[in-house]
Image (cartoon, rainbow, N blue to C red; front, side):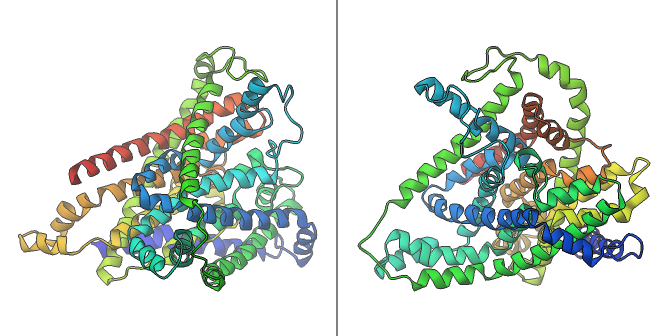
Length: 539
């Protein structure tokens, strides 16, 4: 049965979506009438601003998030419960986080208002504020802070499988300081194991659209954003440019993934080339603990500011608090909110459940074969930019996106992306499960299937719950597949939040963003309850 399920998953959620999307993109691009010419590629590459912006975004963001995560990771060794701080940030979709962060840190945001109230330094919003409302820098800051919890979660899973404390003790006995032992011994191995998660982060930042639409520069936008906009312009020239842009994104992805595959080896060589200096010891752990506190405060601040903004009647600069709070906006908007809420909820529940069950089927088959490493083909959808892949689906499905089929195709597209994230989160705990428990259960008379249901699954309920919560959050955050395959007829909280907030209406946009955040947050709270119960049972 496991073999049959794994084959079905491979066909329906891995091979079919990736193969059909890329194949039909290729067919469309080389069609005799609508195909892409070399002149189109030359035109786009000559207009290098969008390409350079995309490349800069896809290089700087993952590297900053990666090394911040490695710098903060020692805190997970000292206080494993710090992982619970990740839940609020993991539960906040990118769009809601971007809206909340702008309300906190923009030139007219709450932080500037607080400084003005205490010091009188900013009677008007500062013109030279380093985090403007719309810029490439703002996009980088939002994505770094949002990808950081994901990478920390991946590091946390790896720390449970490595004898890190033994390594650190041995390294210090050879004269390394604590900081040097971490960066020269532990960090290179963690980087090697982060190759696949880092690839997913790189490809996401290369092809992200919703965040640049919200807080990115429009003159010009990053390449993925421009491809998205060209697809909604019905001239033949715009459609050809969209196809050419999609192929440029694919080429950039290949180059970046090749560099990413050499990242760990390069870091190891650089780290080991430095001299050992046992006499110099900086208190990096204290700084790391401060960063964890700041991350938790930021998550709570985003949630609080969205609540206040969604209920504020009047909130003029430089007031720290709204003049009055009212539920009138909620009452007015509720008739428009009902449909996006229902769509978001059922799509997330169904696709997260399918993605998690599919990941379990693949991992169980992997256990049966005795394989322990990440099986990268499962993650292949994460290694292809969304823009060309979903564009291929859109061109392939064509008229099948009409006549009420949109919702089904949107659900399928969400499941394609929930599967690899559920696999990433669940992999470490699943393949390292001690098989002696199953052997003992079978010796007591359980069949292999009964032993799995009665012993293994209950013992893995915590990582399975976390995988489901992450998959749920991934589905909630899906913008491009929902917008293109839904043909605008399957509104979700994400599509509505981007549409409203990118138009400049932060008040109503904060309401949609808050609801977009509440749904996964509730799921993560339930996961936290499962984790707490698990700790209580083992103490």
